[in-house]
Structures are given as structure tokens and as C-alpha cells.
Length: 338
Image 1 (cartoon, rainbow, N blue to C red):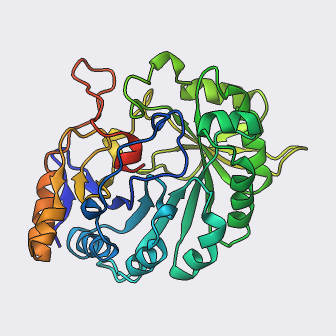
Image 2: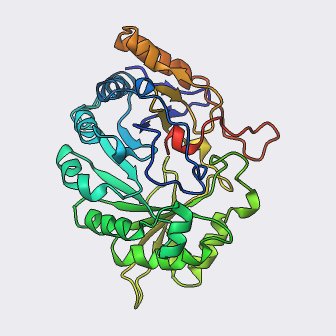
């Protein structure tokens, strides 16, 4: 079997697939208030094309984990069929592909049962605050109650683990650091704080507005007894901490993704496919490789796999946030896929 090996010896086994660039929220750190220029429908991969390209990644290139993202993946009408089609694939060892999904939660109650039946293994739900007014300000939509319903339904669904993704921004939601942790711990969920990255609306990111991992950890340490997680981190983006039980919560785990202050590029195991069929070997890659046109021109699996390998062979050693040569990608996170 071929593999996605980059010049630094890292092998990609995890695939992030954006199924749409559209979203039903307009979060301030993700897109402009007026929204985006959405992809034309004809440019977006069909459900069958997505499944075909994932099949190539699994059968030809050694991918064993797939995460569906957007935009918001649940605004894609065929999302259940896509999940089901990918879950039927088998890795080289004969095991089912691990299938996960990242969502803002608004449509999760509508699709949750069908997604579980289709084989979804895990779900991450974005939740940046428990304050209704602050949520409306951040998301530009008053939908916090809907997200909280989705969180409770996911927790009761049997999906394990259910994770919450939180972006902490200075002067905006630092006050939510501890309440969100307690909210997650009480419900047996794993909260993951994410340092804000320079991949939102143009000119919107300032390093000073980002709350670094060390500061988040210090805030948590004032309220909880933390200890390093005993399980090896491997290529996972989050550094995990155990939380000792106390009178307010039963203990559990918390993760911090320090993409800016402590990059995990050296252990990266990810490759990405955008909604319009472009391979990106890094979230911050400057170049893309077009698999959509290859696919639509009749390329066979081997040709598609070789093009994907060529894209991955050009992967940089890191994103270089602190280097003079760093350039913000021409696409925002919502267009690339988280």
C-alpha cells in the first residue's frame, strides 16, 4: 500500500473532509458579518465523489480516521449518506474506518439518531460560552439554547467521547473558562480549549487578543486539581489533563490545543480535502492539489492516489506562525474545513 509520507517522515493517517463551505452561524472569529462568497453548487463535490475520494484515501493511502467538517457539515443534505458510505469502508487491516464529525450543534437533534445508525463514532460540538448574550454576540445568532439541547442529546446517545470545542478570546469570553470546564465535567464530556488561530476574516487576528494555553491552564489550576494525562499524546492535537473530582464535579479530562504557542506540527498526522475537492497538506498550506478535476475527467484510483501523494510530499515542516515568511491562507477556516 502507498502512504502519505511527507519530507519530514510524518505519515498521514487522519483525513479531514469539508463537505460544505456553508454555515448557519457567522461566528466573529470565523467569517465576516456579511458572510462569505459561497462555492457554486457545481464546484462542490457530490456525495458520491466524496465517498470515492475517501475510499481512495483508505484503500490506497492508509487513512484510518475521517472527520467531517464544514462550514457546518449538517447543512449538507446528504451528510447521513456520506457518513454511512465511509463507515462501510475497511482499512488495510480490515477494520472499519473511524468516523467523527465537528458541528456547531444547531441541526444535530434532527440528524443525531440517523448519524449514530449510519456508524458515526464521535462528535465534537463547538461551544464558546454559556452566556446567552455573549453567545449571540460571538455567533451573530441567538441559538445557545439549541446548542445546549444538542449537547445533552449527544451525551445520551452513546457516542464516546463527546467533546466540546472552545475558542477563548481576550476581552470576550475568558470568564467562561472555568464555567465551561465545570459544565463539561459534570456531564462526562471532554472540553478542549483552542488557541485562536490566524485563519478567520482578513486582518481580524491579533496575537494579543489570543489567550494562550498557559493562561488558560493557570485559570483552571485556580479552581481544579489538575494532573498530566497518563495516556501518550501521540499525534493528537490536544494536550490532555486529568481533573480530580471535587464537591462540584466528578472529575474527568480537559484538553488544550496550543496551535500558536506550542505547535504540534512535528507529530502531525493529518491531510485535508476541501468541499471543492482540493487536497491541502496543512491547514495553513499555500498550495492546493485539484482532485475534483482529475476525478471528473475519469482518473482511476491509482492516479488519484498518486496526485494525493504528490501533494503530501510538498508538506512543510510547520506553519511558521512566528516566522517572517508566514502568510495567512487565502481561504478562511470555514472554507477549508476545521
